[in-house]
Length: 245
Image (cartoon, rainbow, N blue to C red; front, side):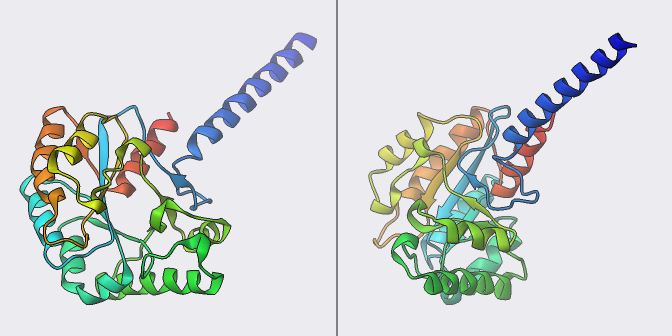
């Protein structure tokens, strides 16, 4: 009898340890009950990567990027500024119609740690409303500008069933400064890993975007290496499935 009790206790302890480890692993990705996880990378178990674009839409650059994505049958995630979304609603509609995902990047690209709380809320909710009113889809992703966030940003995301999505640190293309095409390519391709979240910008203050030309090389090259491009929600979902096994 004592042996049976001891065996039951051992089994309970083992199950408890496994549950704790599973919860710790899962918390990086899941929408679950705590939506406001800060996500920088997906699962390493599959050759999946996510292209993300910030600050758009741009009236010229974004449609050209969409053309390239369509040509290669690739889906991406666009973190838009609310003020640009208001200016170019047809581009937002096209993004959704072609299977891309749209996330919230605030209304006017504020630095959250240098902005009053009421203004942060206004920027967040205005952008949520812009996206919903134009696309009839509820944004579930929030990328704070500069990758800077605080407790208020996390609480806002949590309250609105959003995840905070940043990017994989070695996949910051720094293309907002419009570097040479080769530099953008090298930054992305040479360091690529399973589960990477790649940061690009579809709105820059220049006459030409070198990101567009770089994508013409990056996408087919990574496809040839066996990588699959997914939206951020797909990346998170696949990552959750991996850690749940």
